[in-house]
Length: 50
Image 1 (cartoon, rainbow, N blue to C red):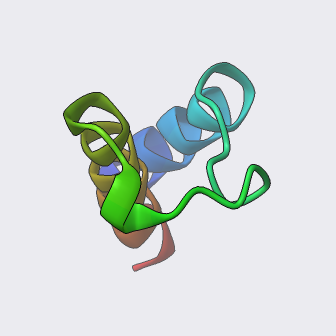
Image 2: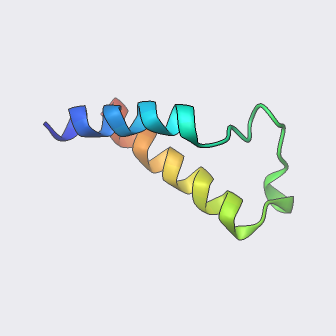
Image 3: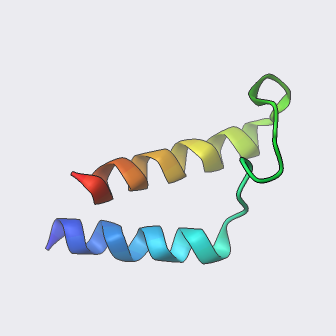
């Protein structure tokens, strides 16, 4: 159940949130909002893959 929820959220993230890797964002120049989005996407992806 939990894994299914994270997979659903990951699909939403893919469509709604920007992909900073495609934009080649330098992490040292990212602002706090961009860092929060990166962290959120990483957390969801980690839990969806477990």
